[in-house]
Length: 562
Image (cartoon, rainbow, N blue to C red; front, side, top):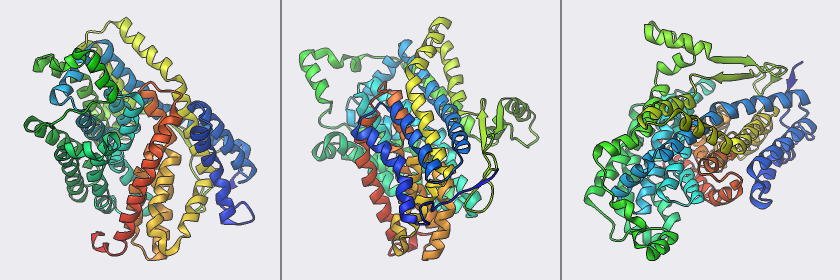
């Protein structure tokens, strides 16, 4: 039997219904930040609260609510959980094989300064991974790298989450932007142009903001030249590529330009003082040889060999995201190439799209049409599979025994059991929120802001990414609502859509999925509440900046709209 979503279940009152829709979100914040629950317990109990609100207040049939949760749980395992497992596995391989010592030394040879290491790894390298893969891999890999370099795990996770703000809108080869074209009817290229006239302001600012968080104003000024090289090179490339090439390449190109620009710059410029964390300064005072590994000399071949696992990861992930390879891996290739046709056949065998029983086409959405619901499992096309292949090749490059290889994989699985459970439950919570109509209720409430809607439009994206963990999902969730509301209040629809995507990037750092992924990557499972408290204020501040930019572009800066 079909069920029609009701967005005002409490006496047809939108405000009261919105307060009800906020209950699971407020509970989650309370559970993590005040009650300080373990992440997986917060995830499980938030899911139960969401199910209760969906059934008891929104009138969603219990069976449909449970099945929507199961759909989200499966998505939390694959592709998201699979990416985390393989990413951590690959990192552990480099540690166990001794290759990470050389990686550490190679970064230290560029600079021992923790501020500059954060720019190289968290900002530039993390942005590259976001552009190539997305779905948690950037934070998982770059945070693990920073921990290996000597960063405090909680600090490393927080820095990487904040740095990930700059590239999220164009992540995973532009999927968040491309996804909006279908439901809104506005060309992805036009949305790309508008996002490319918002985010570069944020991208140029993020490197300075990162260092301010780490060291304060005075210490930031000491490396201001490097900060400017990193941020401005990224922002200019992001603007040019998004406006003249499209949404697929801004992250990859911006990250590469920023990374190489800073690396070359550091060959000719060094800060007057080297910044290390207080704990390191104490250790160095007690043991002068504390930073001796920076003086170890390795050949170029040794350095290349040590970095090869991450170069392979980059290569495989890039290939997995390319057209027409990407559709072939999922069994959707329609061309005549023989090789791709063969891959397509394998992709079909390893891709499963199963209707969710009792849910598929049995919920009538806001547009009056039934909502499709599938368990979608892509074993070959998943980004995690690309990372696994990089790990398999790394086994032979690093000369690891089969025993060590499998032992490392099992070790990673055991460590990640609870974090993966949290990820699955919070994704399940997101699916229940969407299927019941709670997300739409909250969106409709913000849309009532009238002339102030241009200011609040980014908040919809922020809320969507917090709930779903994905800028793509947030754009699909609220894209049509943004367009319709923009037309009602006299705002350019393309600006509203860009605001949704740009606002969404600031919500990524507090998304339960992102928090769980970051903690899992650096071995802090169970301390998710500490990380959320670290990132929350930064998320709200950066969201405010996007709100101001959007408001100004709807008025005095309207000439910036394509």
